[in-house]
Length: 92
Image (cartoon, rainbow, N blue to C red; front, side):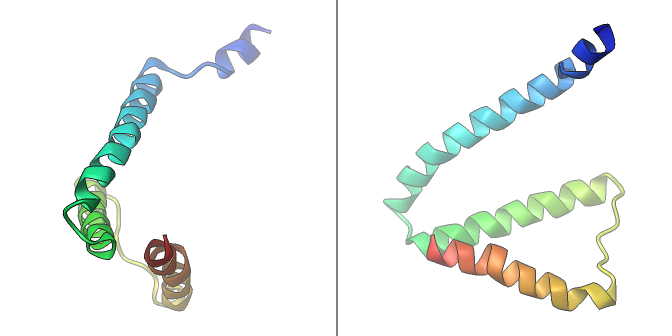
């Protein structure tokens, strides 16, 4: 029973991460409302996606993670990125 109880609790560091993500996500909605009063929606999404991918790639690089995608995965990656990122952000 003790092992099951311990497994259902998050470590303190994950609670801090969850709290930070929750605050960032909540602030994001306020920032979007303000930004869209000044910038067209597609321009705003392009800025967000560009900045977000830049930060993500910088963090991966700093963490020593490989960024290379195997050549045989490129068609699948392009298709998924078109539907999951490009089309979704354009239609939202």
